[in-house]
Structures are given as structure tokens and as C-alpha cells.
Amino acid sequence: MKKPSAKTKSLIAKGRKYYTHAYKPREMILARGVGAMVWDVDGNDYIDLGAGIAVTGLGHHNKDLLNALTAQAKKLWHTSNIFFTEPPILLAEELVKASRFAKRVFFTNSGTEANEAAIKLARKYAADNGRPPERREIISFTGSFHGRTLAAVTATAQPKYHLGFEPLPPGFRYCKFNDFDAIAKMVNENTCAVMLEVVQGEGGIVPAAAGFVKHVQELCRKHDALLILDEIQCGMGRCGKLFAYMVESGVTPDVVTLAKSLGGGIPIGAMLVGSKVENTFQFGSHGSTFGGNPLACAVARVVLKKLQTPALQKNIRERGKQLVSALTAINKQHKFFAEIRGRGLMIGAELAERYKGKAGDITDCARSHGVLILQAGPNVLRFLPPLTITEKEMKEGTARLVRAIKAYLSK
Picture 1 (cartoon, rainbow, N blue to C red):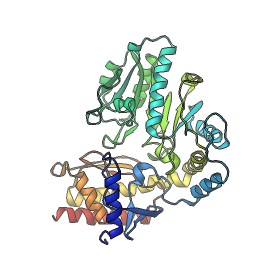
Picture 2 (picture 1 turned 120 degrees about the vertical axis):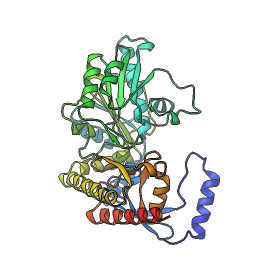
Picture 3 (picture 1 turned 180 degrees about the vertical axis):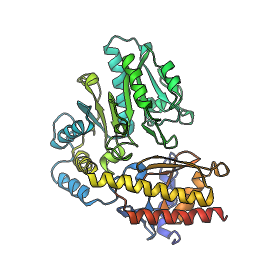
Picture 4 (picture 1 turned 180 degrees about the horizontal axis):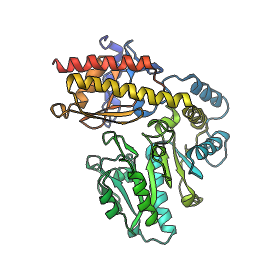
């Protein structure tokens, strides 16, 4: 790898000077990308196995997305939701048809905002049905992550995200994930919604156990509570189906939230709502200045179409198996992982006991060997490559990872 140039050092210094300290970017300046490859300003190349945290699902510099963006940019950029424009109308129709459950769509700019809308929708539905505030509780699960706004971070059942932001909004309760008995005891007449990720992302790439989502659904139906599925990271093809909840038969959510890969790199989020709550939001209930932006929606329409092609869905399955096979081979030789888990191209490798707490160091070592990977907490390596990654790119990426792990172990 080439050493950081004077330009790189200067830009990093400016970033540290002018950004708030909310982020801690790595000491590199990414400049361009094609497919699953990215290059920094110094000419170093990397295999991207993180896809901008599951965002660039169709890879970098996808020509069809670029064409959709530039075509719409020549027409109209923004009008606000005071007026109709064509791209969001057509995207809403296509999402409703693809989801098999939804009746209507609310567009946002991000996943956090989609979850915020879902939380408000659940409370509004309860209020409209005569429930007083004390009977509008929302249950979420330990290890979850639902965003950074105050309500969404409160729904995130991880105390580390709450510190310093108290007092948190009331009306949220937390249950152990995948605990059938615990959730059965917790859902009651005071529950207005249960919110969960079909595969937890930030919590360590933990899939819902077989039958768990359907179990929660039955409890929600019994107590007239909404089933809200957060598919911001695990949705849009990531787990091998267009929607992650489709992996388990018999699941019909009331609300699904989307973002990340929906825009292929362009900021967009969406809340899909089923028949029970399709009329809950009325004029003035909620809003978003940039939600349904025609530029973002024009791109998302192409993304959605591509995600439904059999060839791409086949690639997700095959590359997922290839990645798991490579990680398994690494583990067989080095005993590096305690568990490899996930679905499709959403894979987590939990570190063996002697390497616990070192996920950040390992991702840094991987970067120095030309492969970009993520972490999900201090103990799990997270792999979210572009869904279009080729067999050759995956092979090269895992080969670089092998070299990185050998280098890490030799220290």
C-alpha cells in the first residue's frame, strides 16, 4: 500500500478540524469506485465488503443508476410534497406490489426517519382507537438498532446509545431477542407495537430464530398491536429475498421500514403500511420536506427493478455461500471465529474468545491489506458486500482477508 500523500494528510487534518467528533473516519480518502472495488486518492485499491453499510447494493458507479439520476436531474430536482411528481408515485406503486402486504407508502430521507414515522404511526393508531397514553407502549429487543433520533434511539435496546441523551421518551420496553416465552409474557393490552429486525445488524448479525417473527405476529394480532419490521439493513435483497420477512412463510407485517440499499447510494427511506393502518396518517399527521424527492425516487425505481431479477437473487445466494465457505476455511486453519452466522450477503463472524474486543483492530489490519470490512460491536466482523459482487471479486477480497488475518496473528 502506498503511504498517505501530502494531499491525503491535508484533507484528513481538515476533516478533523471541521467535523464534529461524532464520527471517527479511517485515515484514508476514498475517491472513486466501480463494482465492488474502490480507490483512494493515493491510488490504493480495495475490495469493498461493506458497501457503505449495506447501501451500495448494486455496487459503485452502476451505469443504470447513473443514467436514471442524470435523466431525472435534467428534468426536476425538487418540489416538496405540496405537489405530485411522477417518480415517487410510480415507486410507491412498485413497492406496494412488490411487498405483497402494503397498501400505502410514506417516503423519508433515511432509515432513522422511516422508523421515527413508524413509531409515530403506532402511537397514532393506538390513540385513534381510544387508548390512553399509558396504553401505547412499544416493545423492541435487546441488541436492536433503530436509529439516532431521540425516539428511534430509545427504541434501540442498547444502553450505550442512550448515555447522555436522557431523559428518554417514555413508553418503550425491551425484551430478550429470540426468547419466545419472554415476549409472550411481555405483550399485553398496553402494547401498541412490537418493533424488530428480521436480522439484527448492529447487534452482531443475529437472525431471528425460526418461527420467532411469526410468533410475535400472533401475539400482536391477539392484542391489536402493530408488527413493525425494521428492514433498513437486512432488507432489499440482502438476505436472499427482496424483503427479509419473506424468508419465513406466513408473516404479514403491518409496517416495514426501508432505506440504505433502496437508493443504491442516494439517500432515501420508506415506510410501507398495511391495510390496518393505511388511513392512520391524515393531513398534517407527519411530513418530510425532502421525502419522495424525484431524484432519489427515480434512482430507487431502477434499484427495485434490478433487485427482483432472478440473476441477482441467484448471485446473492451463491456469493453468500462463497463468503461463508471462505470464512469457514479461515476458521479451520486459525480458529479465529466462535461462530459464523447470517443470511444471504449479510454475514457476521463472531471472534473467538481470545480475540474478543479486537474487531476494530482487525478491520484496520484488513484495510491495510486492501479489503474493507465492518464490525458490529467489538466482537463481530460484519460483511455486507455489494449484492452484485462477482465470484472473482469475492475470491480476491477473501484472499486479502486471509493475508490480513495472518499478518494480525503474526504481531
